[in-house]
Image (cartoon, rainbow, N blue to C red; front, side, top):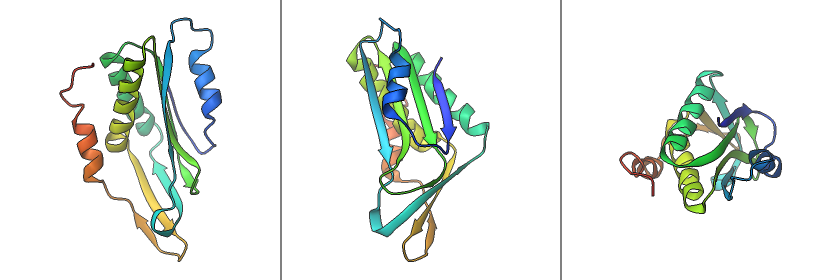
Length: 153
């Protein structure tokens, strides 16, 4: 059963990794992705909004798909909401497996699908007072598309 959380609190990579592998002799490796807020183009903060319940269900469905595709011993998805400053973590994805290839591929899959299928709304705040809603990016769609018909390696 994956661990799924949407929270305003900071993300603790060490704590989450330890929790995923605690007492598990079948974990050979954990792949991770920790996404950080960038300060591109003078961004002062990123504000993320979501619909409670709907967002967690979507994240759980993405994690369940990863668990169906790869022999995972567990996975964790933690996504922040609220106001996030440059340099702060936004999202953490962990995939644990007996072997590295499954963990690495599942981790890449999870973050690619989160970028395109998770219902979050992102607004950039700039130092000069401007604000802008973040639009979908073609590059994110292309990254996610590679998994549509791909069999696990």
